[in-house]
Amino acid sequence: MSALLARLRLDPFTLALLTVVATASLLPVRGAGAQVLGIVTDIAIGVMFFLYGARLPREAVVSGLTHWRLHVLVLVSTFVLFPVLALGASVLVPHFLSRDLYVGIVYLAVLPSTVQSSIAFTSIARGNVAAAICSASASNLIGMVLTPVMVGLLLSAHGGGLSLHAIESIAAQLFLPFVAGQLLRPWLGRWAERNRKLLSYTDRGSILLVVYGAFSEAVVGGIWHQLPVTDLLVMVALDGVLLALVLTVTTLVSRALGFSKEDEITIVFCGSKKSLASGVPMANVLFAGQAIGVIVLPLMLFHQIQLMACAALARRYAARVQTPANESKQPALAA
Image (cartoon, rainbow, N blue to C red):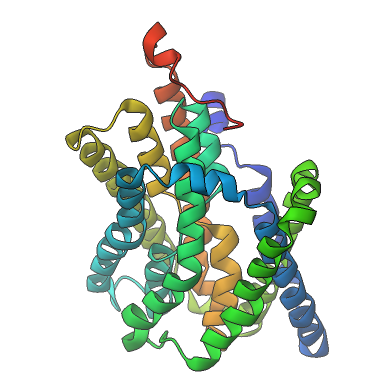
């Protein structure tokens, strides 16, 4: 039992998310307090994307662009394979899955990959770290534009279509701060790198603010009375199946196309992640006025499932027999 609990242990950020959800369930913010929280949250999100732009190394992106076959496969997995698989969940609506949870699953599927965890797991598994940096960064850059467009295309029939106001909000709240951070990187880049750990708390704090506001609104609207336990169980199962299918497909395709083991690792980890850091703030803009708490629930669960599954997978990759030849090819994390 202790071994099982050790495998299922939650990371600190997930524990913080669960604490915020519990707090919002017991002490939801209302009225004028909710309006103030909304303003603070918008400012925090803008700061988060500004700092992300200041931290993103252009050199890493440029140096990895030559490995285009790997990057194309990661992007296809992120923005094509995931949505195609997620759309299959429509057969469960409305008998086994609510409309809002289905919207949440499809929204999860069109999000970009993570940056930190994709690179970290690739490094642990002794994969191509330089390519992981490039692929994960490119996925997030492309996702800032492509994710809202795909939300409009795939969810227009389910009340999640893309409006002109949503486009303006994405540009003002997410894209412009990011661009500003990139432009100021020559002056802020080294400072941001030195304080990466401190700034990570800013990122996570912004997400926690969004989650608290979203779930407060959902609790005031009666989310826990409207959400059947069966919906939650089906959603968890769908998240697990979705991740398992993507991990399997990316592994088999990378091997069939003749990629090296190091490149396979990068493709598997970068192509199977979904970014909570980008997804929660973007949902706050794209689904304003809708049941945001329910819509981001599949993403929050997927976040923990992907961490546990990929941590185990990374350990298995790292434990494979290393020959002197391929050990010498392993890139350093600082690449």
